[in-house]
Each structure stands twice: as structure tokens, then as C-alpha cells.
Length: 323
Image (cartoon, rainbow, N blue to C red; front, side, top):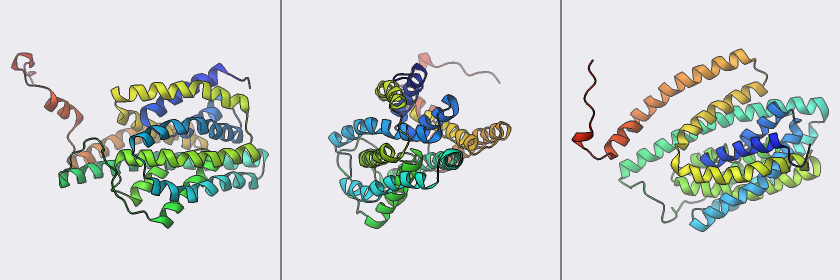
């Protein structure tokens, strides 16, 4: 592949914008795109995407370090598990063989991880709803985070979360942001959102570095493919981050959860017809269930919130619509 393939660079730009908007990891999107739309062999797609992530992860981590929203105790214990886990993930790929057998196994593993990542995004959103409900009960305002919340570290459990996440990232390039955040939320429900994201971003840097080293030594790294992804992804992440304050990231995340589910099912070999049926059921049923969850947890609909924030002006009110 050329050093800068325009089509791959455009895909990298689009994925980078989504990453900047939502904060999710790019591997969950970029690797399936390379495999399904550009015909890149799975191992080459994983290797190149992991190395490309090494150049993008530090950007967000530095921002959170400057803001003081990183729990370094958690970072240390996550790295105890994730660094060897990521390298072992690459070795596990090589142990599976090569050629058609490796491709088949890798597609199945990646499809399963994408389905789990889709469920993980929904679980993360639900846990955030529970956290907001606890905030309302305790009377703590949901304002900006000025000080770090003191959270006692659980070393063994944290290292196991890091090892599991690192193993998955080393094998599939997916999981650092999609799966490990859910594990951290379950272990440390009192962590604030900014601390959670900042901690995950900082620990992901040595994790991805370990996985990148493994793929450079034992994977199928392609310099031209990685360069093409980075040419589009780096400005895309910057643009998405600039737009994030003016867009509804929650809506984008819900759409991404459905996209990840559909991509995972396709990689698992599910025919197009059943995939479309499952996606339709998830869209309709999931929207109804989510609205019910929000109501049960005391969340007002978004249009009500906008009306409450809007200053009352009788002269601007519209007349009631006749029934």
C-alpha cells in the first residue's frame, strides 16, 4: 500500500472525528473498517492499527494529566497487568498459527470482542445514570471536578482488569477504552467521570506501547497502512475534540453501539438479513427500554431540560395546537 492512500486517510479522518467526539478507542472502528471495506488481512489491520494508536493515545492523556484528573495509583496497578497482558496477546496470536487458520480465528475473536464492546458501551451509560442518581440523592452538585476523589485501590482486582484488557488489545486492537472503563466502573463506582476517562487514557499509553512492540516483532506491521491511517486520524481527533462541546456525544455513542454490534455480527459470519433484523429490534426495543430506565432513575427528558433552562417569555410562546 502507498505511504498515503487517500481512501484509507479519509476513513482515518472520519474515525478520528468520532474518537474526538466520544472519547472511545479508535480500534473498535478502524480495524473493522480496514478489514471489511479495504480488504486488509486481519493481522495486518490489527498490527497497523495498534501502532497507529501509539501516536494518538498520549494526546488525551497529557490533557488529563495537566487537569489533575488521573488516579496514578490505579494507573500503576492497571499497568502491572496490562503491559505483560498486551505483549502476551500478540504471542497468543502467533501461537494460533498463520494463513487462513489465523484469519478465521482472528475474525471470530474480533467479532466477539466488538459485540461485547457494544454491550459494554450500554453498560457504561447505565452506570453513569446510576452515578447521577447517587449525586442527586447525596445533594452533591454535578459541577466540574476540582479535586481528586480519594479511592482506595484494590491491587489484585485492578491488575486483573488490566491483564484482561491488555490481552484483548494485543490480540484485536479493541478494548482499551471500550472494555476497561466498564471494569473500572464496576470496581470503583465512586470515581468521577473525568477521573475515569483520564485514568484510562494514561494507562492506555504503556499498554499500547507494549502491544505495538509485540506487533512490530511478531505481527504483520505495514508502514504505509499505518501512515495512511495517521494522516487522517490525527487531524480528525483534533477536529472531533473541538466539536465535542457543541454536539450531543451521547447520541453519537448510541449510534456507535449499534454499529459495533452490526460489525461484530458480520465478522462472526451472521448473514446480512438476520443482522438487519437484530439491529432493527435493538434500535426500537433499546430506545424504549432506555427511556424507561431514564424515567425510573429520575432523569427528565432532554427536551424538558431545554424548556426549563429557557427563560419564560409569554410573547414568544406558541399557541396550543388544536386537537
